Amino acid sequence: MYRAVTAHPEKHFTGSETVSDIVIGMSDGLTVPFALAAGLSGAVASGHVVLIAGIAEMAAGSIAMGLGGYLAARSEHESYLSERAREQREVEEKRDLEIEEVRDVFRSYGLTGDTVEAATQGIISDRERWVNFMMKQELGLEEPDPKRALRSALTIGLAYVAGGVIPLAPYALNVPLNRALLISAALTLVALFIFGALKGRFTGGSVWRSAFQTLLVGAAASGAAFLIARAVSGTGGA
Amino acid sequence: MYRAVTAHPEKHFTGSETVSDIVIGMSDGLTVPFALAAGLSGAVASGHVVLIAGIAEMAAGSIAMGLGGYLAARSEHESYLSERAREQREVEEKRDLEIEEVRDVFRSYGLTGDTVEAATQGIISDRERWVNFMMKQELGLEEPDPKRALRSALTIGLAYVAGGVIPLAPYALNVPLNRALLISAALTLVALFIFGALKGRFTGGSVWRSAFQTLLVGAAASGAAFLIARAVSGTGGA
Image 1 (cartoon, rainbow over the protein chains, first blue to last red):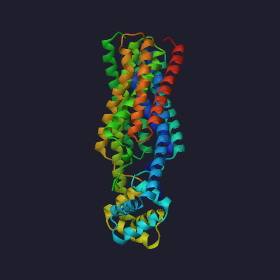
Image 2 (tube, chains in turn green, yellow):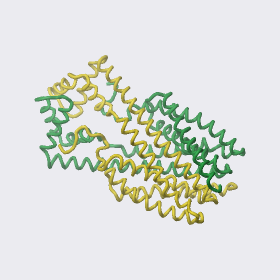
Image 3 (cartoon, rainbow over the protein chains, first blue to last red):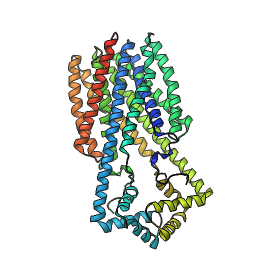
Image 4 (tube, rainbow over the protein chains, first blue to last red):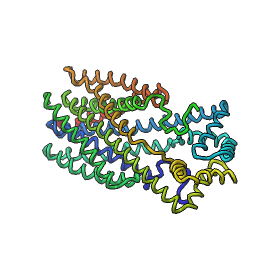
């Protein structure tokens, strides 16, 4: 066997999961801080304010993404366990109905007659196996791994901060604001392209397409933020 | 049958998918603009700057989330189709190996002997059915729906903007900055709690837990943004 039968949807990742989390976190972390800084550059006079806003965004965004992702994964795991407990009750209390559901699964694969019956008897002869079969076939659910979720959330959160450093660093230099914006844009667009390509590689898609898509999202978000912030600042007293 | 056999993982949502997207987008959209505005309030003197930064963040965040989510879903669909094409080739070119993999799937469910053989023959008697079976059983993949992805991305992006309006509105009022921060915090914490509860209801988890978790993420992100922005502003000339 050259591929595992019990594979999870993640299995088409061709690299290690941690590297993939880093790449995803960094390419996302580049986008919003870059766009925010570009937007503010069009609207406020001070590079220091842009820097503070960018750092506040990185703190807020990475915590929202990391902590939020972790708590969501924990809830998902508990939700899986409660669905499983429900399925377990149903297998006991509505035995005939659940047996018919096993038959329906095999019929949906095109099996007929005695084969359906033999396969169904095979499944229902073991309670645990039956419940796992129903969870996967009927509900499309596989048990999530909460440890992996914690590591993944931390990695993505930290990588988000690391990604955010790239567009913000030029605003910490002692250069005029529009020069800082230009350096930030040049650095970030190159970085978006590279991280987009790496993201494509690690998520198994096309490398070039992923590179251009990541670049497009970053450019669209920052272009919109720039134009909107400038329009808003024109109407007030900044 | 009271539950569909071909259900997707989303099926445990108890409300309509669009309502659930709105709630998810709004509760996420509340968090980062609120945290950013709170962070900047501790570091810059002008409510107008806070408002511009918040609006720029909403524009950047909603485009990154909406467009990014849409493009990711489209890539995922194409990746599904390319995996499916590969599986189709393998079924033709490595027929014996792939038949053995079907047997392995049934053996992993605990079936034995003639039953495995009969079920396997049932599957491989139809090429399309065989490929779909391998996609789901071996790779854990079901065909994503690209139309749903577009609608979902648009809904979440717009709801993100709608959520961001709540924490930012007080900064548009003609009140002192620390008063605006207090009103924003009060409004947002209440809204986070309500949307967290709705999110729990629509994603099938515990309503109270989801409410408190959403509140916790918002409070942690904005607290950190506030403290970090104030620390950074103390080191410079803002």
